[in-house]
Every structure is written in C-alpha cells, then in structure tokens.
Length: 283
Image (cartoon, rainbow, N blue to C red):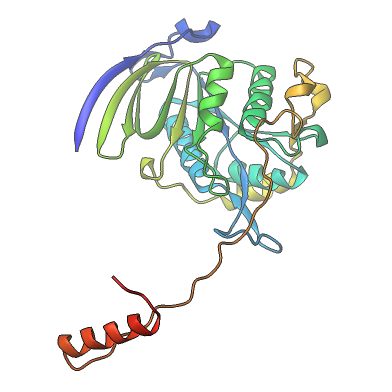
C-alpha cells in the first residue's frame, strides 16, 4: 500500500490550546463524544419484526474512544438521535464502557435526512459543552450515505478526517491513518476534531454484564427541541430535509439462466446457437 502524509488545519474551538498530555503518565482528562445510531439488523427493506442493533461502524468509533480512555483517561459520552427505543442502543454503549448517555428525541426531528440530522446533532453537541474529540462510524448500514459525520464537523467548524484506520494522540494533535481505496494516507489534525471510523480500526469489545445491569436501571438523558432553542424549525425533520424518499422497492427478480448441455464444446456451441435462434436473437 502507498502512504502519503499531510497536515490538516481549520478554525478551532476555544479549548484547542489546552495541553492534554502534560508528561509521560500525566494527562488531562479527555472529553470524547461518540455519535451512534440504532439500525435494523437486516440488509433488506423488510424491517417489520426485525431487531435493532447499534450500527456496527459506530461500535468501532466507540471502541476507539474507550481505548483512548483506557490509555489516557477520558470521559466518553454517547449521543444518538431517534425515537425513545434508541435509548436501548445507548444502554448497550454504556455497558461497553461509556460514561454518559444522551438521546436527542422529538417528533419535530422525525423524517430528517442527513443534513437535518447533522444540523440537529451539532446543536445538541454545542448544548452539551466542549469536546476534544468527536467520533462517528464511517456510515450507517441502513442508509450508507457516510454524510452525517462530516456534516457535523462542518456545522461545528472543526477539522475532520474520514475513514480512520489508526489513531495516535500526541498532546493536542492526532495522527490519523486514513483508509483509501488503493493506499493509506497519514494526516495530522489538531484537536478538537471529528473522525469517522472504519471496521479495520479495531475489534469492538463485548458489553460488561455488571454495567449492562446498571444501564438497565439508569435514566437516559433526553434532549428535545425545547432544550435546543438555537434550532431553526425550518431546518428540522422532514420539513428541513432537502432530500426526500419518494419510494422504496425491491428490484425485480430476474429468471435464472439456461444451462447449455453438450458432451463437448462443439456440441454445446451448436445447442447454444439453436437456443438463440429459437429466441430470435441474431448477431
């Protein structure tokens, strides 16, 4: 694989200059936010009766946050937008090791496309306070757009690196290995920043049974539209979505092919020509 190296700089938030790593073994507490989505556990359009799961790429993002927490010490907050049942996805993340759970939920947010979703989530992030690092999965397996993470970074005005396959922290700088189609790219980015995670970044840990029992007893903090007064109603939900799904359908199933028999290639060729002639296909 080929490698290239570049530096990424963008206007930063107020906490950009604080030194996270003071000396070896002495680190300021990182504040990390992980965006997660609850998705149906299926790769088809049939969703009735299908159980919901945490989006797999979001688990890679969470695992990256938890590894930074294990190594440097950090406070990890998981954030999701969706109906009340999405709280179960947050509880699973808590069982894996997250510290705080926040659900953004309001009927006003229903039907949002990626732009309206990222706008709402960015407002929720501002309301929660400053974060050193925001992590998202590279994409959700139900929409496959890979747009929400980068759009959040744009709304917040912070640097972003997508398709992170490796992360190294040094003071207020991250060195990220970005996965490309035919190579890897090394990118240096200053904190605060947003990264999106790919599957090869890590292997997500299993939930802890004790923490899972704790999570089931905990109240998930919920933010509604009333808690986010800065939001413009015209940019929320279906009303604020420039893209709309008009129709979903399963592609028609084509008939199977015809097996051309014959004891040798010559006979098979003759039989094929006969079939083509009967179908009135000429060359």
